[in-house]
Length: 154
Image (cartoon, rainbow, N blue to C red; front, side, top):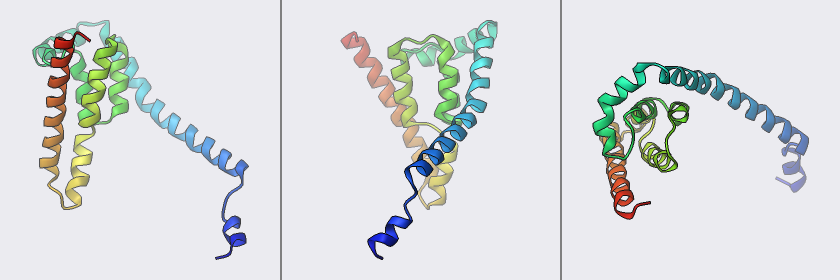
């Protein structure tokens, strides 16, 4: 193929900008439809005893990672859904910067476990085993980070 023929297939700058903006707005609206309602629900639930009661059930487990019990809501969303849902739930929880970092690290390792486990399984890999490994690694990293945080005082 000649250089002239290759140049004909490249969209103009204006087309690239238009397509990029269109794609960006579509993605933004998809995320807003999902994230905004979750944020509002969690923020409204904070005014009730629901978050506090359920958070107290998870408090002993979450304390191992230096997190309040309410952070368990975000972990459930991250593990079963995706990181956007987890962020929407974390935002109104008034977490410290360190707690947000702790959540982000653990959730970054183990997120969207059902879907990604199924995808891994469809490739011939042992999806359940790999999903369990991701979850265990996230827990181990969370414990390690909490230990370093406690010992180092950061």
